[in-house]
Amino acid sequence: MSSGSMEQLYQQVILDHAKYPHGRGLPEGSGTVAVAIAEHADACGVSHQVNPTCGDELTVRVDVDTSGPVPVVRDLRWDGQGCSISQASASVLHDLVVGQDLRTVDSLHDSFRALMQSRGAGLDDEAAEEALGDAAAFTGVSRYSARVKCALLGWVAMSDALILSGARTQEDA
Amino acid sequence: MTSTLDATRTLSPEELAAVRADFPLLSRTLRDGRPLVYLDSGATSQKPEVVLDAEQDFYTQRNAAVHRGAHQLAEEATEAFEGARSRVASFVGVAADELVWTSNATAGINLVAYAMSNASLGRGGAAARRFALGPGDEIVVTEAEHHANLVPWQELAARTGATLRWLGVDDDGRIRLEDLATVVGERTRVLAFTHASNVTGAITPVDAFVARAREVGAFTVLDACQSVPHLPVDLHALGVDFAAFSGHKMLGPTGVGALYGRRELLADLPPFLTGGSMVEVVTMEQTTYAPPPQRFEAGTQMVAQAVGMGVAADYLAELGMDAVAAHERQLAGLLLDAVASVPGVRVIGPTDNRDRLATVSFVVDGVHAHDVGQVLDDAGVAVRVGHHCAQPLHRRFGVAATARATASVYTTEAEIEVFREALAGVRAFFGADDDARVHRHGGDQ
Image (tube, rainbow over all chains, first blue to last red; front, side):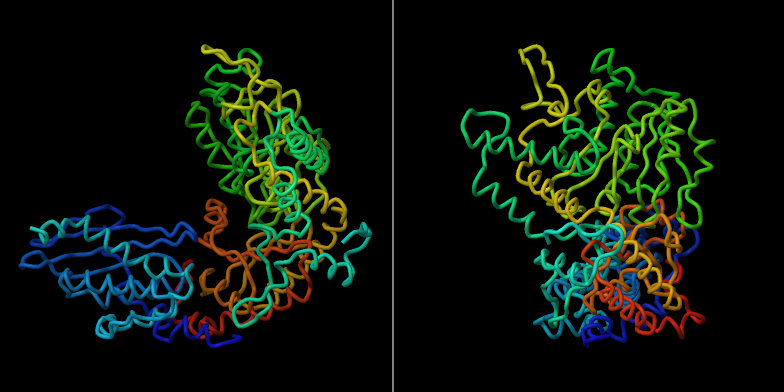
């Protein structure tokens, strides 16, 4: 490698997540159906996303506990094939959102999107960056516009899966 | 570069340096001042200064609407436009009136497919009936096709009720010639195939396809995008009925391509796009159409780009396509050697340097193609990553994506060495060597 820019892009934490991903593997029967059968008081959504430039595919399933005042992500599982950025990002996503209510998830999503648009600068809001945890390691990815899509693939799938789950409606109400 | 190169040998270092000096972009540097190693000519080629100058010159000296207006500028613009048509036609061994300008090769193939669609609806009268398709008819393509020579035929089949069939690809990435006898038959009306794969680089033995198509009375449609920039191509000698290629892959501008159609076929083919410039007599009720090629050139054409494409054809002709092909054949060998020298790298396509282009697609064990491309980019090496608009072919080899290095007339041996060195570091960077056993992350790519 001719410079440190590859090390900045592929932070060790990203390589580790890509190698040993968290939340990978969908429960039996999830398939690509839009809405899997949810357990009692749960909403469930499945979204299949493709990065058309490279053919990478990712399926995300969210299970949302809707029994409380604000829906909470009970579990997020994913599967797919793709580059280390997209795989690591989905792994980090799992760690970040499981157990969080949808308001927190939305706030994390907003921060991550802002980070991906920062062209390597990171976020001005230190607390927001702190909240991103391992996802903050993707700052280097935002310098490479062609790779931003890879990092966002899992988040886009989660966002879609949450809408499909119907949990959003209950949150709005 | 002014002298014609000797076709009996490859380019000398001096000749190659002269060629490279014609391409302004090749001398730019990338991040951290690294020199550019452009191995993505299969996606689009760089342009020599004469092509850029020709476009600029057209706009600064000759710009006017072509085929109308009695003023001098209109005459000069028309001459430039039609002169370019003659140059490109002669470059591929056909007559000027057999060459239709299209916006790109995809548009050329769609033109044929939609004209056949119109014939199937009865448009074009009795003469066009030969192009009509319906249930029971078959369209045959191959598993090696770029989406541009697959999807338009899927759509034509869906519109007409015809059946789409295809020839398979062998483990070397070559189209299975034995399928010609079994898949192509009396029901086959169209045989659409690539001259050279944009993924495997394999060159198709066109004569076998044309012979079989003639036996059964099918039309042949050749995707010549990858062959025309890299090989001597004589479409009349090949005997195909239609062929499409683009300007931007053959050192010309984007936004222009060409469709060749055998004269007697174009004469009977109904138009696809209709409107201005392609008519004879228009009344409120109906319209008669201009003869080819104008019949297929509705609306204002991409005149400056066509002029640029003409100059690009001249540039290549002056180098001599035999010399270009000889140079690239050597580069193909170097690329294959480079990839073979790195452990854990597998070529998708022929590994012998025979009947193939300097287009080498590969997968790196345990590392996704995107990540491979990123590390190569860090060394200044530009390759294509992804499915290269050929998803079925990738699926055939059980991979979602490959990295692809393609050389062109301006590529040097030294550049391929930079590529090899960068590729050699990829697996170590991602720890693929030590972890392959434990956890083949991305190994299912």
